[in-house]
Length: 237
Image (cartoon, rainbow, N blue to C red; front, top):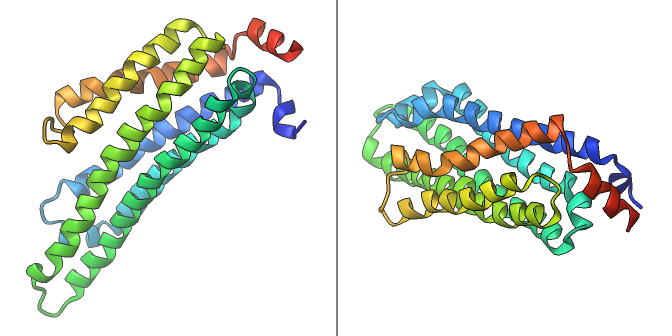
């Protein structure tokens, strides 16, 4: 038995809850730092002028992605006792989710270089830099739909199903997750076909239930942990 498998279930629950909070806080920080720069129409100038801000925002986003992968690894020994296939799949799904985060934020960091080259040119011609800048921004926008919304919701579905099946947590939490995940998925899929503005109030309402549940889930795991009856019975098997 590995050291991870020997870890106290209550401690695992607290760590998973903390990682959910870290991921959420990191996401909010990333938006707070990046949004003013991304919203500036003169981004060829603003990325260079706000280099530190962009770097902090990108790093916060990557920390959030790492936290989601980490919580899937930490909760693995608990889920494994109830559904090993889902436990393994959850790690794989969270790992795939992290890939668009990495690609998107590398694009932002590369845009800093493009911006600096534009600002440093003796006679800057925007037409020579716009295609590169627009391409990097488009890459970031697409990865924000693919990773944080589509792949995240696809990872959430089997996770909440496993929680429902195992009764590790109250079933209202699992049911909320199973309802919220498809809405979250739609908030990422519909903008891909220009059927919804990803920043619209409707889009926000669609992913808000899943985002809110993650905070409720985090607090529950930290304060109450997993169902002790289920943990005890699975340990006896």
